[in-house]
Length: 239
Image 1 (cartoon, one colour):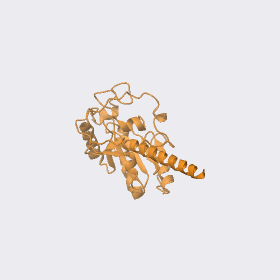
Image 2 (cartoon, one colour):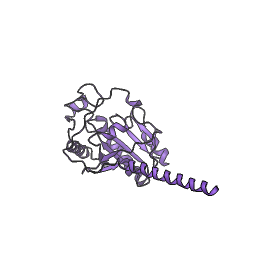
Image 3 (tube, one colour):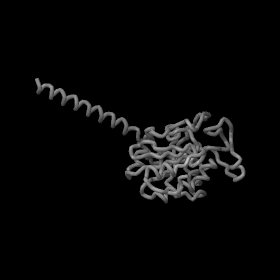
Image 4 (tube, one colour):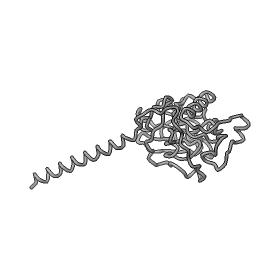
């Protein structure tokens, strides 16, 4: 009798292992198999008109493992960014966002200060203030006064190649040092992480969001405090 129980238990374990393997394969299939061509069309999004502070991911949430893309169109999963075994700071945005331009130096300063204790990535996504379309968080064509004054005239990218070109512009004008990756043609990152314009997400090695700034270092937020706490450093930037 006991032998039959052992055999039954072994069979159950084997079945569970098989099902787990199937689930693993299913998850693995989420990784895109092909590089993105420059001519790939960018999918339009419905503008988000709600409260950005309460939208999208929050501290304590599990970070979705979606694909972002290198300059040559190769997919990179968010989990891949954690392969060095250190937390990551992800900041999204676009060149047409004045706050993104203002805080790009903050991102590079963070990268330099924490060194190999933290990996920092900029995810280039939807243009915040395109001159030819309703913005992703607006119900009008909102060019923004800052962009008019600074002569930042940017169209919403219609193709992956156009998004890549604007990311290059941001890198050159902002003299960016942090690694820049691109949201995909279906705006996978924007959809999964939230509809903000200049979000910052601090993600630990278990893919848990430890902190979020709706606007990087604005409106009373200070990502330096969260970084110091997680990495046990004293930046003297936490005020």
